Image 1 (tube, rainbow, N blue to C red):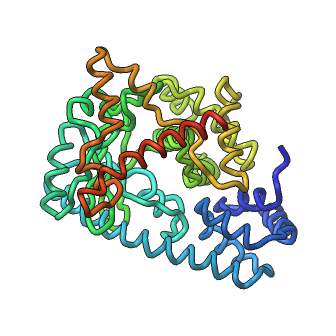
Image 2 (tube, helix red, strand yellow):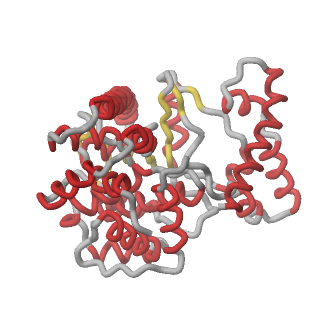
Length: 385
C-alpha cells in the first residue's frame, strides 16, 4: 500500500528527532497537501495536532493560517488538560508517599516529562498508577479521603475476582480519572507479565516535582507494546501508543539491554509481539532497535491491517467485537457463564447512570436498548471489516 502525502507527513511529524534529510522530506510533503481542512480534522483526531504545530512552527514553512491556528489550539488544549492531570498526580503521589505506599507512574503521566520533555505534546486522558497488590485497597482508601469517588463497575465483585482485571474501577475527582493498577492485564490474555519482576527492576525518579517509581527501559517498552496492542485489537485505536514506542526506540535505544529485553519478552510470552511491533515501526516510521533482528510473526498481518485502517482517512470505528465471547469461555460452570452474560446485557442501574451520565432514573430503561444496539453494531462492523 502506497501512503498518501498526508499519511507520510503524519508519520514524520510525530517523531521528536528528525535528521536534516528528514526535515527536507517533511517540507516537500507539506507542498503536496491539497486539502488542509481534511488534514486538520484527520491529524487532530489522531492526537497529532500538537506535534504538527511544533514542527510547522520550527520549519517556518508556508501553511494556511487557519491550519496553523487549529494545530496551535490543539496544543494549547493538550497543555491545559495535561497541567490539570499533573496537578492531580502530584497531589495523589504526595498522599500515597506520605503513608508509605510504593507507586510506579505509568504511560502518559511519566512519558510527558521523561520522554517528550514538553508537557503539551503528548495527550493523555487519565493517570495510571501501579501499586503492589497488598496496597491496592489502602491506596483507594487514601484517595477516597482526598475526595475521589470510585466509578461503578458493570460486573459484580465475584466476577471481577474471577477475571482479575488490570485495575480497579477508576477513581474520579473533578473530571480527572485515576486508575489504580495491581496488575497490567486481566486473566483473559495470552501474555503473562510478571509483576514482581517489574517491581524488582523499577527505579525511583523525580517526575513532575514528586518522587515516584518508574519502569526500567526494557519493561517500559514491553508494557507500552502490551497496552497499545490491547487497544488496537479491541478497536479502541490509540495513536499515542505508537508515538511512545517510536520515540522511545529512537531516543532511548542506547539504554535498552537487548538480551534482557528478549529474555523478559520470552518469559512474559510477548516475544512475537515485540518483534511484530519492531517490524511495524521500522517499516512505517523508519525506526528500528539497533541490535534486534526482528522478524514478523504469524499475527503481523493482522496487526499491520489494523494499523493501516487507523492510518486511513476514514472515520475510526471499532473493528472487532468486544472480547465478551472469549471471556465467557473462561468461566468454569454454566451458571457463571449465564451470570456474566446477564451482567453484560443488564448492567446495574448505578453503573448505567454513571456510564451514560444520566440524572433521571427512568431514562436508564431507555438506555438498555441503546446499549444493545451499539453492541450489535460494533460486532457487525468488526465482522464486516
